[in-house]
Image (tube, rainbow, N blue to C red; front, side):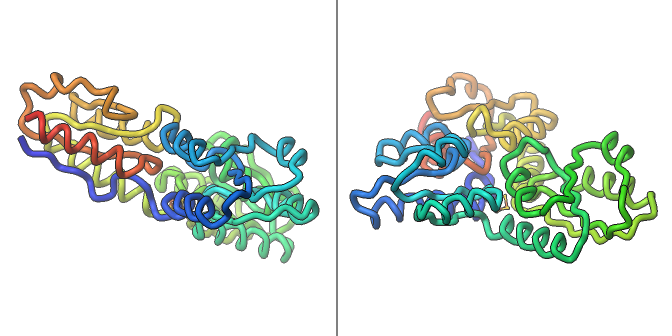
Length: 284
Ligand code: F3S
């Protein structure tokens, strides 16, 4: 049997950096309580392992307000400016592991809003990354997630508009929404802030799924980018399986196949991918 593992499977640069930061701090800060602001990534296994290393998860602003000491790590999604201000006011030490690509968006929206622009974020308003970007964009900020909202959008003032995107937003959808807003004739500047890591992972998964008899997609059930990968792969390969770890997988399902593809979401650790890959190889 041939096993093809996607090169882009697993942690993207920003997630790897955030996870590494946690373990580095665990080693460095002997005895100090370490917190992550929200689960560091959408992966139960990783969060459990961090808990085993003594790391606790802060579940939002209220818990942060109650904190007296310790070290807080900001995850790759980033946080609104007020969260950093709150930690500064309370004198709580923190390490900012916001992905540099997300940090760049914070910088853009902060500067543009200072210049008096209205900010539009194309993205999902409930996603923590978008909440974070919003929190750096000043008062005049609108989040638009679909065509209906783009149609309805009205610039009530004569301000210039600066459009940015959630890093994981679909590029074609972003283009369509920008087009709808552009047609309204406002003074607009558009910055495509979509990160290529997601698109590259999806493109590679699609091309592998087209060629194999079975495809395994590994990732947490709550990870939206893994769900998207599963969707893409299932369209190309009917034998596509969505698993969190090796335990979820019945190897008998591969009895009659000759080629297997493996990919994984952005929050799936390498050891979980390798375990699946090795077991598929050993069993056949
Ligand atoms: Fe950063 Fe792109 Fe990953 S924005 S967190 S490298 S998906």
